[in-house]
Picture 1 (cartoon, rainbow, N blue to C red):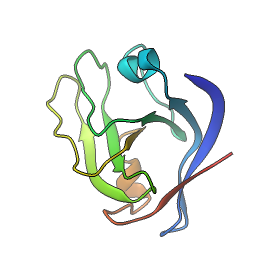
Picture 2 (tube, rainbow, N blue to C red; picture 1 turned 120 degrees about the horizontal axis):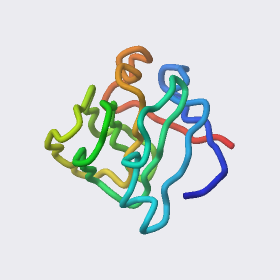
Picture 3 (tube, one colour; picture 1 turned 180 degrees about the vertical axis):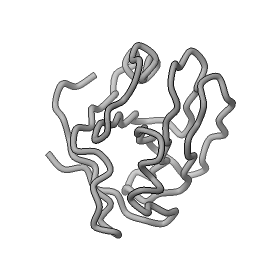
Picture 4 (cartoon, rainbow, N blue to C red; picture 1 turned 60 degrees about the vertical axis):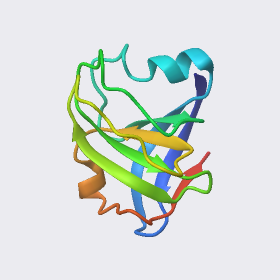
Length: 119
């Protein structure tokens, strides 16, 4: 997992989804995702690259999952996913942004919005 932190911004709505977003871009970091964590603080996020699906198996807390195309367009939002719940993938997604539960609703993020990642 890259140690650099990005800011995930909804360019369509002008809102910040995560001020500290880590990037999971290796085989191991993408496979583990947030499983080792016990929570996400407000403002934190994890961008899992090169995937259109995630799993909630072995997770210990709920998340919002925002599925993104390679260009950052939102193709699907899965709000308040509970640990051990099944998750359907999203056609056309190239990455998934995992956020604290309620973030998508709080920022009014919707399918079709553009998400940018800023250093």
